[in-house]
Image (cartoon, rainbow, N blue to C red; front, side, top):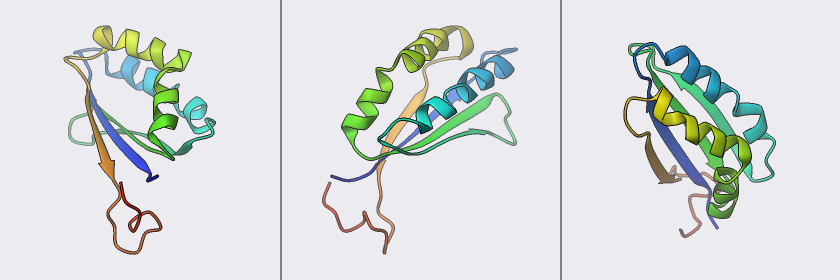
Length: 107
């Protein structure tokens, strides 16, 4: 089993950046409290403040799937069409850094 890293980018609709940021930030403490969560961060682009990023690390795909099915994430996802211009860009990554504990594990 290897760590799952996800990066999701959200582009706020005009005038919705503050609401999008608030909605994303409301997920932090709840997500960090989940047993499989290793890291959960919200970032706002410095040069494009309507662009928001979620950086998250999960112990396993099952832990991430559990997270996505929680009531607070499903409520957030239902609000995304009103808050965002287009669909979020979600990318999954495998850790490859030399010397990391997970680097030597097969995917």
